[in-house]
Structure formats: structure tokens, C-alpha cells
Image (cartoon, rainbow, N blue to C red; front, side, top):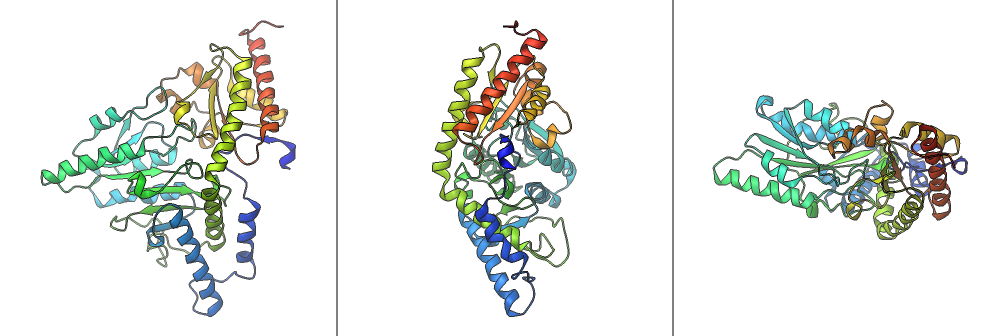
Length: 397
């Protein structure tokens, strides 16, 4: 089926790799045992499950007993925000970037007052605005490692330094109210160093489905001194924070996926850069600066991502015409695109409605190579040219 289309939406999800699937398969059949059972085959599965968690933890510079395995980044984010359940809701201020995923926004709504951190035109968070908006009531800051729509990489270590300084100032005044820092690294994993120690975060979420692992599989890393409120209660699995029989096949697959991603990270980043350069070159040869906008800071952008806009063009029409030609592409976040809503990420960056409506997200990955990128982007250029002629943005040739 993969030969029937050219897939340019790896930011939405990725196919499970053959190696990952191979690692998972025994745990659906001969190794089906419940890891909490007392007999030897189950204990063996428990040992292999814990070994997989240890591999995952090593890949982010953490310890396995600091991980909570979940059903994806959305659940992980909800669990992370439960740190605020220990405080009075009326006194909670939560700072989140204005481009955060819907799961962050919805989780934040449950626990206090939200303040949005401004974003600059280049897609980077405004650090001065962050400094100005932190108050004595701020208890949580959440900024994703790399934006899912634009691919722009955020200055997480600098944000961590600002938060650490604020915490020190509070302690000096005799105020021991904590200020936690959470980051969703679902888009950055596989292309960036996600060592929790280097990043300086208190909590980190990751989604296996973005790195050729199984869907509905994720994790929350949280420092052991952080108190969280279980979102699912029962048998007390996963540090007592995520009850239910462990999803052994998916965690085994997650471990294989993240190990492969980290091992080949530098090589894959270079390969993606080559593909991106091809796409940019074709687009620049077909459109003027007035007709095409490259969105975000390209020097601080994931090589997998290319965010563009054709102002005045209806991007949804382009998506449908591309699908008819065998090219699968998105307008932005997959979670929002199917609702037909205008991208809040692009609007927060200062793009006009017309620019936002004409935006497309090209996200490349392992299903791409120079040949199919050449073909796909040339088809894209042809379809946009036709649409520009139809609506009068270009004269018929």
C-alpha cells in the first residue's frame, strides 16, 4: 500500500518499523503472560518489560523508576499537570506557549489560570515575555521541545535557566512554593538530544508513535520528588500512577524504536536535511517571495519539517487535489486539521488569516527519498499553480 502514495505527514504519525514489529510479536503469542503473575514465565516477561523500560530511560538520560508508561503523550501530559492538584486551584497560574498542543491547553484548564507566552514571528517563544509573565502564583510552565506544526525548536535550556532563577529568588525570600517545568518532546525525539539533565526540565513527555513505534504508547518522565495524582487507579502499577496490566508488547516496541532512533539520529538528521533542501529548491524555482512564505526559523527547525504558506490559496483544496494525485500532506496539527479550524499556532506567530489559510505542513521521514520528494513537490507546485490561475492570482499561461 505504501507504494500507492507519497506520505508527507510523518509529524502526525509514523508506520511501525519492521524491527519494532518483530520485537513486539512474541508478546502477543508465546510470551502473553501477565507480568504481575507469580510463576516463572510471567516473571520472565516482567524482567524483559523492566529491561525495556531501562533501555527507554537510558535514551533520555534517566532511570527506569522515574518513568510512567502511558497510552500516549496526551495521557502523559494530563498526568504531568496533576502535579498542581496539590495546590489550591484559585492560586495556580500556568504559563504555556501560545502554540501548545490542544492536550496541554485542555489539561491546564483543569488546574488554574492560564497565561499564554507570546511567540515571535520566527516561531520561537519570546523569552522576555516569559520573564515578564512569571508571578509569585506561577506554579507550572509548559513549552514543547519542537513545535508540531512548524518544527521550530524551542530554547528549552534557556527557559529552564529562567525558571531556576525564579525558584532561587523565591527561596531567598522564604517562599518555598515550587515552579515546575514540563516539556512535550514528542516531535523532537529522534532528531534532537532529549537528555532530561541537559534540558533542565522537571517533567518530559514522549510519544512512541512519532518514532516508528506503536501508537497509543508513551511515557512521562518525572523527578522522583514530584508528587502526581493518579489518573487511573486500581492495582498500583507504574509507581502507583497508572494502574492496569502493563502493555508489554508496546513497551517492548517503544524500547526498540527509541534505541534505533537514537543510534541513527545523526545520520537520519543529515538525510532529512538533504530531502528538505530538495523541496525548498523546487518551491523557490516555482514561486516568488510574494507567492510563497517559508514559515519559522529554518536555522532552528527540525529537518523533517517544512512549513509553508501560499497566501490567498485555500490549502484544503490543495490537500484534496494532492491526495487525488497520490500525495498525502497536512495543513497543520492532525488533531486540529480534521476539525477544520484555523491554526492557532500560525496566528500566534503573527500570520494573517489569509496566510494561515494557505498553509501546508510537509513532514518527511523514512518513507521518503530524493526521488519521491522530487515527484511530490513538483506535483504540489503544479497543483498550486493551477489553483492560483483559477482564482486569479496568476494569469493563464
